[in-house]
Each structure stands twice: as C-alpha cells, then as structure tokens.
Length: 243
Image 1 (cartoon, rainbow, N blue to C red):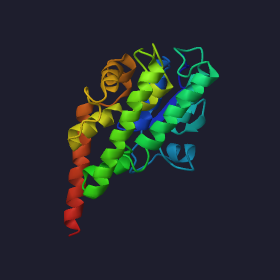
Image 2: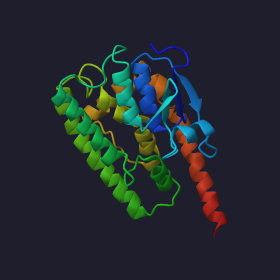
Image 3: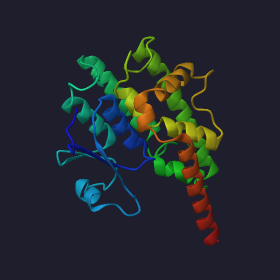
C-alpha cells in the first residue's frame, strides 16, 4: 500500500477519465489523496503538472506527474505490481490484445465524434449539435457497443470480465465510462447496453457496478444526471440570450 502523501490524484468528480484512475487505485488497494479541480479555475498545481494539455486527470507519485488516464492506469499496474491483482495479463499476446481493445474504446467510444467524450456529449445534450450529428453519434456508439459485445465473448471465454475471473485493463477502460453510458441512455432515450441486443455487456455492466471499487470510484448516477441537466439548462439560457 502506498505511504501517506505518496499518491495524489487531481481530477473532477464527474470525469470518466478520472474514474478510470480511481478504479485502478481502489482495485490495487492503494491509499491516495484526492484533489477536486475546478475546471473553470484550474489550480496552479494542475497547470504545472500538465503544462502540455492542462487537463485532468493527473496522478502525482512522489511529486512526479503522470497524465492521460490509461497511461496512468498502466503505470499504477506496473509501479505497484505487488499490490492487488494485476490489471494487464502476464502473457505478451494477451497483453497486446488487451491494449488493442483499449485502443478501440479510445478511438470509437471516447473519440471526438462519439457520444461519450465529455464535451461533445454535453454539446449533444444542450442542443448545440444538430439532429444529424446526434443521430450519427448514436449510430457510432451502437456500432461500437456491438463490437465490444463480441470482444467480451472472446476475451472472457465465459468468465465474468474482460480480464477473465477478475477485473482487468479493458474493464477499467470501459468501466470508467459506465455511469456516462447509463446517463446517456436516460437523457437521450437510447438503450446502448440492451439485454436482448448485447446480453453479455448488459450483464457485465451489472457485475462491474456491484464491485466495491466501482462503488468507491464511479460518480453517483443521479448526480451525473442533475449535473448534465444543469449544463443543458445553462446552455439553453445562453443560447436564448444570444437570440
């Protein structure tokens, strides 16, 4: 277990990318200090720790900064190999396959054109995206989920998670987005994780959400919905004021 003050996470409560890092830390049983960032008034520590992108999450380990959520997760798994279960498999081929599917999630699910990247997601909800853009985004997301359904069947071989019997690298990458997927379903009226169309992913989502690490790391669903509605309302007011 990391010593007091050894690990410090800079993030926001609603960030799906910050949730990935929290998941890895909790799965490994590591103690850390959490610093909530105000993205409208970023702290000097954040600006100095991530001078290139100036974005969250940032993990500080003994004062040294790491950026980009899955880079951080990879680092946690390697730097704290003796703590908790490994997130990446030891076999080089299986490790490469896990990284392939994480790259797929990044390119298809959290890319700028997909539903779930935070700012375009808000733009879709607040009405500043066209109906055609929204429809295209939903189609892309449904296609990505269908592919991940097949991937889960191949990777898990009938076991509960992408990582097999225990949560792995791919589970963390997708699991960090889970509350946003569910919020998108509620707010957009589209079922992405459908028990009939994607039964494996739907069952995976329930199992993942029930994990102690997920309960500790993921944002509250109701709070995310309220946050999104407030953002949508603020955007609508701004648009009305400009007309």
